[in-house]
Image (cartoon, rainbow, N blue to C red; front, side, top):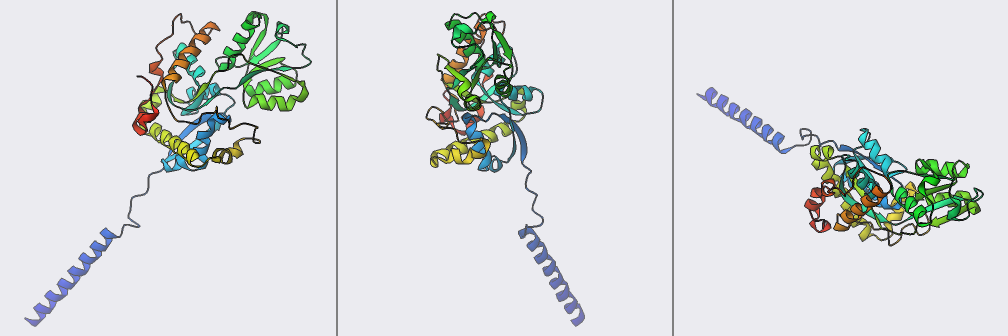
Length: 336
């Protein structure tokens, strides 16, 4: 009887020890905790204009990482180049102007605006002194570099018409902004139609050989985060995470005045005088003006020969407000 009792007590002790061990394993989750999810890679094309500031701040301050993303930023000299790279499968998203979006609509290309992250109103014609051009009337027969399908095309065509210069009387060279800079410095181009920061760069390199003609219509343009509709439909959570990071960047800049220039300094060769001006609107939004301006740009593109439309197509399908509206409803005033 004593042995049986002793054996029973021993069995109870072993059982209690096993239960205690199992309990400790259920509480101590260190080694057995599920591995944290890997960040999702998203590839975004941008230009180094000041209007890309929110994207760059989101990268530098870690807001993309906080949103669960591994953001790979690819620099291109124009938003249209980023869009083309996206169509080729090299990028997931692209920053571009509403002019590029309007051109896509006219050509029935798959592109949607997710949010506007900046606005700007800088574009000029740079003329190389010594090219025989002293006034607009001297432009016939000259070589003008610009990128077709961008705001520069609209501005240049309207500038020529306003000054009584037939478009067909000049040689339009369709090229990228970085090649324009080389072309005008080396004498392969007589004039270029381009935007900042290339205007400042060319003036600096040409020095006293640069003649600058501001375009007559100063218009505010929108810098849009865009993606292909197929990508948006397949990866809505990634789109939402990108917008979250951009909203965090906007809030950070609001709370830390002057932080934008410090956070983006490495992306620019040197601080540009007046670069962070009041007309560079650094806001994540989608408003009705974006749609109206896009329609206006479509009319102007049609007048300069883009697309085969005689009427403006419905532009609403080229917007995707859902992500921003779910995160910050007050930032969406687009009627849709």
